Length: 484
Ligand code: G6P
Image: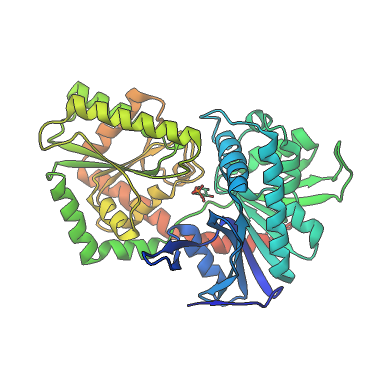
């Protein structure tokens, strides 16, 4: 149900993320409607916003004029407008041309442009102002991800009554890399405005605390970072901020149930049949992003074909790459490289009626994703760096039959929880080849044992448990929850 609302400052839970939880869909006749975005964050937030006076502040995904706030399932959606120039400088520029590569181990070179930084500051300020407009006195504000790192301190300046949390969905780099950022101290100061900062891994939380120590002179005791508020630029209010790892997850039950439906099972059979019913279907599903290690995966697979360890009639690699950030040059270059690599592999190794690699540059609804997971004997998750990687967890949740095998890069947050997967180092092509073959040929009983262990893990730490744990930590910050 959608309607416009005009009441303000009455929300006791405010979520702020770069994107709203809905996408605009424009019909043939030009009318636009809103559709719930796919993805775990929306599901998780729905569960915590239910029954509360909640609002969500975010960008609607298009350039242009501001859109009136509206209600969806009892939650007020507060769209924030970005002009075409702001999208270029803030979103494509500072967020995805500076922070994204810097926070992912400089896999591609980050660009440090002063005009992008200026836009980032401006847009973070706009977010903070939009949040304070809707937040009730003493409200809880949950800020998400690297796009909004200045928001916590801006909010605290405007509204000291708020309880402010931030969660980083991506890695936080070591201070050796983070230190490259010309505006590193401002980013740390921005984050230290929060009461609680959540990270995917203890390493990320540790990297943040070390950066605060080395760059601002803050100290860490247990999981509390203390800073006297003074640095070269200003002397401020002292801060005590709790930092901890709270790894994100997925809605296990709903995916498990979806994958059990006869429509999805039938579609999985159809997918295998369309591929010519090979003995082994290998699958890769990623946003088309240089962090995902798609090229390393293709390289390993092409060598397995060249070595004769796999043949295209016996095995097929189905690689699905979801279009992403297509106006950012590193993403355009990556797409051209992958197009060429797939073309080369198929030219060299396909036979008539059996392509070595089936490559699709497309996104799919969740029913189709579930069918793909169910159809895949091996899922290849080979990022060079990834905050968590929810695709790995989604695969596990879909395998109610105990089938399938997960090849998982050590450089994902997920690897810290999913130790029963076939772990790999994607930079080690020889090792990756061996791991793929092992995942294909391990004894079915041993494979099943691994999958059941993975499923237990994801089931017990699902996205609802994650959200509860996060909010409990935020409510208890800066004291440790449970420590009374
Ligand atoms: C990652 C980030 C999210 C982001 C998503 C899609 O998961 O952590 O913040 O929304 O990628 O990227 P996009 O740039 O399309 O929002």
